Figure 1 (tube, rainbow, N blue to C red):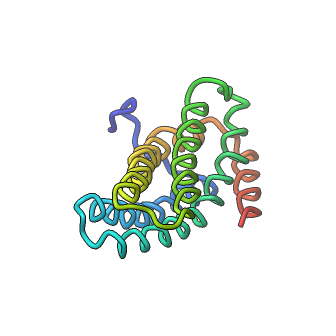
Figure 2: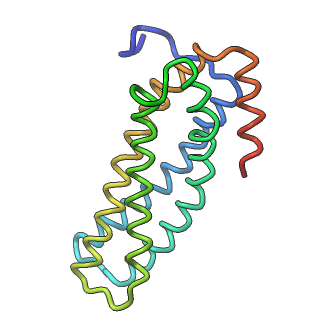
Length: 170
């Protein structure tokens, strides 16, 4: 039994299983980003750690973008047919995607400025720390609420279509 209505864990269809399976490597990357932001916050080798943070954020964004596209371009619209997209779970998920992407985007845009001072580096690292908190909570909501909801909601044909369509996004 779980906290969301006492149902046993869902056996997810292939497409939903894939989306859920993409979370652990993304979370591992997020943990690395968070560790770097903590070191920067504590004044530990700021220049070295900030340079590493820039590289790791670019790598993370490259991994996150196709995952987000699979959800925003395929899963969310399919679920939206049943529950709408302007309010409720899909609207919340899209809002969280937008918030995290905005923080990552602002970070990457501002790091192109040369000669950043220590305080500016710390403020920019804070953007990534905030994205970390948004996304770790977001992934948990998807795994515990959204994906099981999709499993119950979508027809077998829609689940097959979901899997087929997310395979096309590289």
